[in-house]
Image (tube, rainbow, N blue to C red):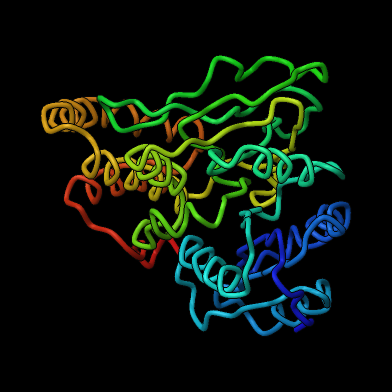
Length: 310
């Protein structure tokens, strides 16, 4: 481990688990912004000895924390948050390995948080993989009736360098965002029982209930390269977790009559949805994972996914 700077301004956390296929690109992405980061924390979530050795060799100046077993991406992020806050970081960011940032982006985002103390978190416009300017996300707003996310109208448009200002959003992209330490101290860490995915949805709801605001800096863009899936679609594990966690969060924050309507609607459309996954993915496993996740979400089953999906 490298020496930790006293009272770092910005700490960046990345969780990883046996991601051999993207470590080279991750190193390149990190090198472009390393000078803007005071404390770089990598949390290894129970990877093999070979991967851990490669990780230490690739990032010799980073703090590497280790979990003995895979406890999920959210638990890994939380471990990183605890370390960052205990070392005095003023701002803490989540950055998944397949996000690419331009030099200067982090400094621009920190300036927004510094200039506006009412801003609890900030991100940039997320650009779709394989493009230079097609928008994947500009944050999202929360649907009070269904406890879900509604993308903003800019999705699919072309990003313009002339855009200025900060767009206020209910929640930011889960793959990359910066948070003020006071936010974590106010609403706590993310729910580890979700394991992975939809943590930005849960974060948005808790921040909204606490009357805190998030923003997206329109003049900065980041690229979501989706290196983790090698250009392919999401694996069955991801399908299961998204299906389950959306239902879990809906049960947590949605009003009762809307929860019942949504459950009924999901059950009515279950077969068409499964057929859709079968047609798109070409495997029965994806369709089964969607149904399995929906049922577990309705029952309120949380935590580690079924072993056959890991």
